[in-house]
Length: 179
Image (cartoon, rainbow, N blue to C red; front, side, top):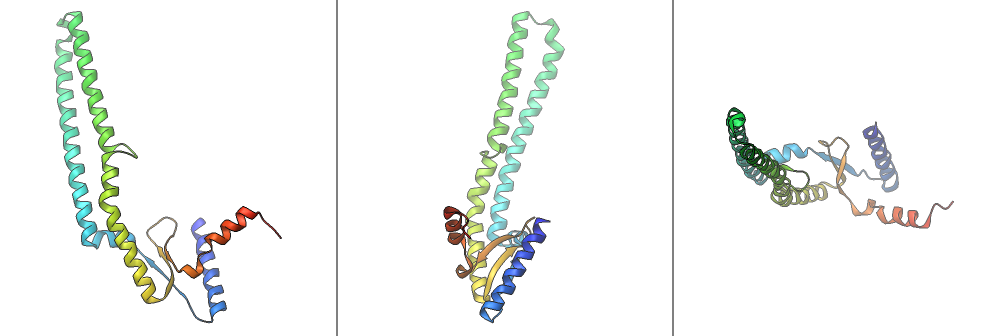
């Protein structure tokens, strides 16, 4: 429903632009997923990130396998152990479980896990380059607005400065609504 409202606003805006300027301003769109899946620097950055994720998942799997193996051995021997050895073994297993959870959180925890940080540092320069390219193409094609069709809600990727009403809205909000 929101997307329909946004589309309606864009259509009304484009009609009013046409009426004001007696010339048509173009509205364009891109599919960012297609660009990211076909642009070589984006492919390389994603591949590098996928390699790190695979490495960390392998380490996690290895830690879990070792933990499960030790736990199985401990369960078999637990009844025959002296009480102080039982407590020592339980503490050792609790420590291994905590190490596993800490490693998992460090690598994959949101929003500060290494996966998310690496994603940001590796893909951000590529995304900035893509946005710069979108802006250049939009200007060359005479487009007033460019949206990303891949998003759930359309996202404005480029807008001609002459249509930016940010400061008018801010001024209106600061002054309060006046009739």
